[in-house]
Image 1 (tube, rainbow, N blue to C red):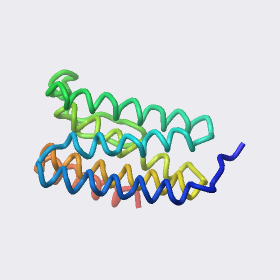
Image 2: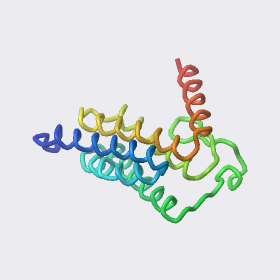
Image 3: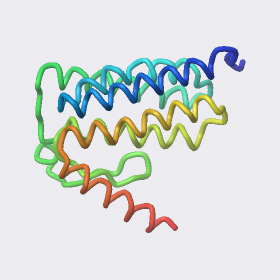
Length: 164
C-alpha cells in the first residue's frame, strides 16, 4: 500500500536542507562525519518510503552501509579493501567500483545504491531522496580524499560513456 504523501514534500525539503547543511559544515570543518550523520534521516525516510521487494532491500542495505560508515569514521578505522581482497576493483550492482579505503568504498556503494533506487522506484519522493543521498555521497568522498573523488568521477564518466 502506498505511503501517505501529505507531509512528504515538506519532509523531503527538510532532509534536503539538512543534507546541504551537512555538506557545508563538512567542508567548513573538513570532517566527513558531519554529512554522514546529517544524511542519516534521509536514509531512514528512504527506507520507510520504499515499498517494492528489491527497493526495500536496497534502501535497508543503503541505511546499513551508512551506519557502518558512520562507525568507521567515529572510530577512525581505515582499511585498504583493495589490499585485503587482492584486487583494485570489484563488480557491484552492475558497476565496476575501484577499491581502496573502505570508507570510500562504502560511500561509493551508497552512491550506487542511490542510483539503483532512483531508477527502480516510481515515487517522486523516493527519487528525490535518492538524489539527496547521491549528491551527499560525492561530497563525503571528496571530504575523505579529493584525489579519490577525482578518480571516481573520471571512472564514472568513462563508465557512463561506455554504456551509451
